[in-house]
Amino acid sequence: MSFDLTFECLLDSRCDVAESPVFDERRNCLFFVDIGRSALHRVDLSGAGHVEWTIEGGACSTGLARSGRLVLAQRDRVVLFDPDAGAVTREIAAIEPDIADTRLNDGKVGPDGAFWVGTMHDVPDRRPVASLYRVSPEGAVERKVEGVVCSNGLAWSGDGSLLFHSDSRGAWIDRWQFDPATGALSGRRRLASLDEASGRPDGAATDAEAHYWSAGVSAGIVNRFSPEGRLVGTHRFPVPAPTMPCFAGPDLKTLLVTSLRPAGIGKENRSGGIFVARSPVAGVAVHRFDDRWI
Image (cartoon, rainbow, N blue to C red; front, side, top):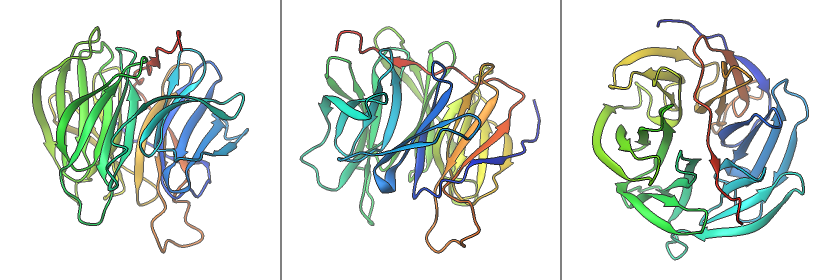
């Protein structure tokens, strides 16, 4: 399917690094983080009802929980946040707390009900010392993938049988066979290798056709790949650095994309905002962290 997208600014938030958009169908709103300002945001799909919370300890990525709370990755902790109370209510796990030059980055809830979150080497001279982890609701932490510079791009196919994962600095996109019952990974396959011009892979989402949408943060584009890694669409973004797409709305055809604000950008530029387009193909509904007993 070939198509064009027309993006409009939903929220001119001017975030430092807006990331991790997730659609909450119960509240009919979008949650996202601003990593640069340690903030968590909520906004209605109309662009109204904007709320911002400053989170001590950082806000790097987020996902929905079955209880209505959010699972939130901080710099080196995974916690539960209650948006109704506006507060962190529980710590789930610590990840690499003794390593000063890494931090948590992209995280999403998998079909297995666990929170999957990766680290990144957070220094100018970045090296492949980061990893991808699985965090169970009970707080068990399991390292799943090693040798990553900046873990990113987590997304699952609609049937839960495929996991997509990227390294923004590698820069590559991989696909794994995924067991939704256990979270076991197998059959790693390299789908794409990218560069600055083709769009280093940042955050991502999947659609109902098992295609993978990747924010090409270095090239001002959103790329759409087939499940086999063929580039089937490149969509020009209205600001220089998109960071992550997600699908929203009752039919999951509202495409929302976060962005970061590069240093020195002009005052009139809406970089760091949230942008919206209508997609002809529906996205995959996100999963919820299984916190029923917490």
